Image 1 (cartoon, rainbow, N blue to C red):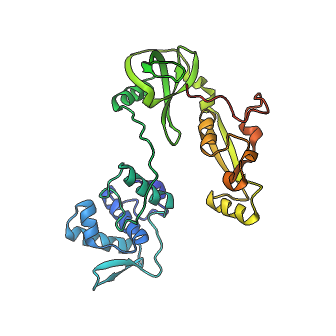
Image 2: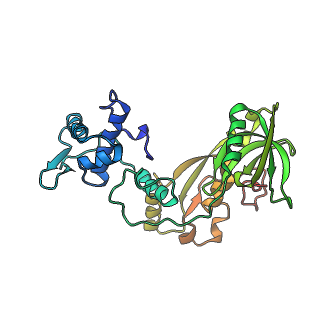
Image 3: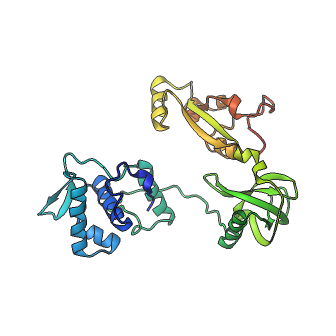
Length: 307
């Protein structure tokens, strides 16, 4: 399930066993999002017996009195008129993430807590094929703090070449998976696209201090606001769309990932080059985001880190 303990907004179940607690949360999830639930739902989702399902509903009623009512004719429990979530905090992003995960095959319908699934579609994205064995070996190198030799297809070279890298982190830019690593050949920290690692062989100790990757460890606060060229009502719509307060939202981004972030939001070019209704959002603190040493006519924070 795409849920975690951070969703809980009260702790009446803190002394419950994990399995019981999950079933209590499931009851409340279905009441909120589906508007009804019965014992068969618990049985099918968790494999419990009919008596256990009945006991779970009794326990939920004891924990959160007055939150549900039972319709003897429909044989379903429904949220009462004073229903209020107590065990989970309703989260629209997580609900929609369930649909997206089912669309991509990450989550099956049976694994999801959704029942009456609305008609939906998700725009397809080309699948970035990452070999699991190569990923495992890179992750092992990160965990053990060693360098690993990879055969990498750079866009600056006509064919794959072997090089030693000291990986220390993984990243995802919304489209591709990357590994952040010190490249022994170039003597610099770089991003490597995971799918372009075509082979892995050998490990060795290294002396590079991975804390020296300053662009990875530096966090930049990016302030975003509605395009000033929009009408007042249009700006209000953008503020609601992006969850802005007082006309802005602040997002913290590692400087090493800033290029991808700005490009994805269309903030890597001069906002005057596009119509306000198309650009919609602008940077409010460009001096903090873009490096001071860059030419004033260059609207990129630095050259693309992908090689």
